[in-house]
Length: 111
Image (cartoon, rainbow, N blue to C red; front, side):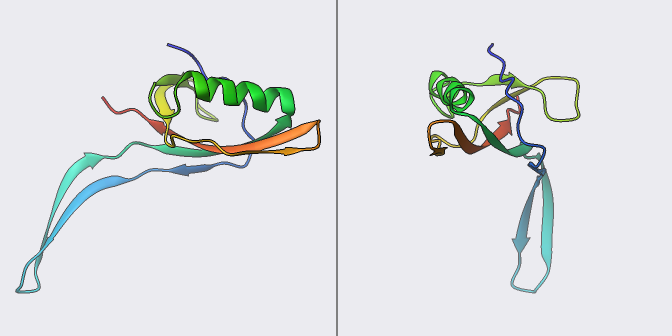
């Protein structure tokens, strides 16, 4: 399995969620059932040379967007997780011929 080893900007967003099913009854009461954790997600920003951003785009294209899973180690952790890109498309911006940037969301694969 391939490894995504590009270093994001130090500013990133992390999301953790839990799947809770809420049933509301006519009496006004509600019932809650815990269905388990949802995949953790990381919104990452990259700003680097055009060459590095092109490598990220090539990695994204080789995984066919959100189709194929890969390994990635979240910031501050030492163990790689199995993840995939959340989106099927990737938008990036070029600033002249030297610099470029992109943002993407990586989502944990829960097996």
